[in-house]
Amino acid sequence: MTLSRREFLAGAAAAAALTSHAVRAFAASCPFRVAVINDEISQDFDHACSVAAKDFGLGWIELRGMWNKNLTALDAGQIAEAKGILTKYNLRVTDIASPLFKVDWPGAPLSRLSEHRDQFHAETDFKKQDELLEHCIELAKEFSTDRIRCFDFWRLDDPKPYRDAINDKLREAARRCAKDKIILVLENEMSCNTATGAEAAATLAAVTEPNFMLNWDPGNAATFPDTVPYPRGYEMLPKHRIGHCHAKSVVRKPEGKWEWAPVGQGVVDWVGQFKALQHDGYHYAVSLETHWRGAGTPEASTRVSMAGLKDALAKAGTGC
Image 1 (cartoon, rainbow, N blue to C red):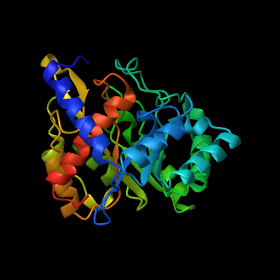
Image 2 (image 1 turned 120 degrees about the horizontal axis):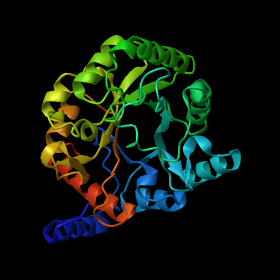
Image 3 (image 1 turned 90 degrees about the vertical axis):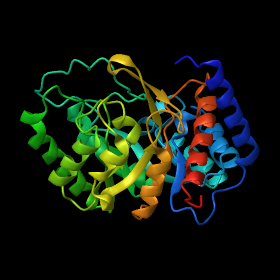
Image 4 (image 1 turned 120 degrees about the vertical axis):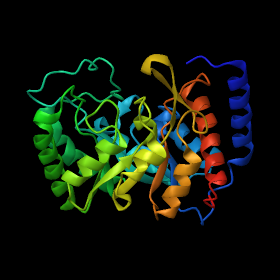
């Protein structure tokens, strides 16, 4: 994405403000576990944790990948090293941001969108998903979190013939997680079969296991040109089943196209969304998933977006 001069200057000012004030930790009155996905800052895990804790003032972090590996591909030595780094910076883990079920549904025709997919260093197939789930449960125990993120398979042009079977697989996974008191959070993802608020509401209505919850991502939902993630999409959701939240935004372009944007810009009303989450008693993670790279590097872009997130939290009167 190419920034205009005005956007660049605004972003630089926001990042500068964040750098000077972020050493203040989030107030105890903040109702949310404000976090950032570690590899949105850097693949250097120590550096990512340093930025999260010292510059952003966070006590929580979401784990997805490090050292150019997906979290699920780390060996025992790397897991131990990562745990030591978390202790060093006094960071707690919101969830295991796994790639579980981000694969093709067997026997279904590939979508026309199959070439546009974020892998985040994860490459698995359907046959390995049960094994991956077991590994994610072990990772959740290692990193002392009760949440694992999942998806519901790469988006099909017509999911109806396969939807019941997909829901059965989600139920099976949730029941397996329940044995270890783990919550399985399904992310609404534009490249998967649950993408919007309406689709998320339908999936939650079908998969009723109490430990199956939603990773609500208004930014992902906003990639669909006819959607309004907040308030319209959010209003459709059973609020007590939102178990995680990703923060990012989208700028819409002509002909249904879109680009990522930092929090505070674009079409997602984060001030309104934060007000609603607080009003509805949500008290889990709000995790920055920047995606936008308009400031030049992942770290610089995340600094801009974190400044926007903090500003939205303040304007929403959250006490954060």
